[in-house]
Image (cartoon, rainbow, N blue to C red; front, side, top):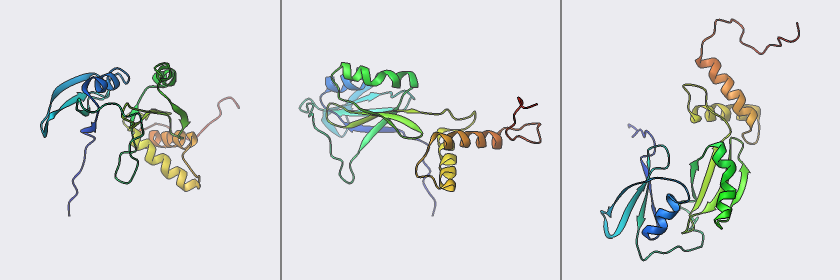
Length: 195
């Protein structure tokens, strides 16, 4: 049996409120450029708005003028979307909570997740949105996922409860050593000040 190999998220489509509320949130709060607009091809009474979350992929929103902001949390039951997370830079992360609070948007966090810091808030229909900032940059030629799996393996081997910055730092060191050559025969840690 052969797998169907995915190569990334193509797009995520969410059920939004009315057109203007959707534009005001996705572009006006989160800064995602509004890049494409057409009817929902499966429901002609709805719109289908497309936004770029920052990596050229797509977040799309079904809009309907009869749907208005609900002000209550969306379902978190089995099969429901718990939250959607977006990556932000450290500079943006440090400003995010204050900027959201200035608009009257309630914020939870920041929360330290070991490998990232996060804040949470709800969109106008009650969907939980997370803004996440990695605590590391992967070494050249590696992805965040490469660092995460290496850090996970270190955490498990050491018997640690959850991931921490030490696992990330050690994972990055190991990836660099494995992927980048050196003329040195001993690449271990040294103390050049002890001579």
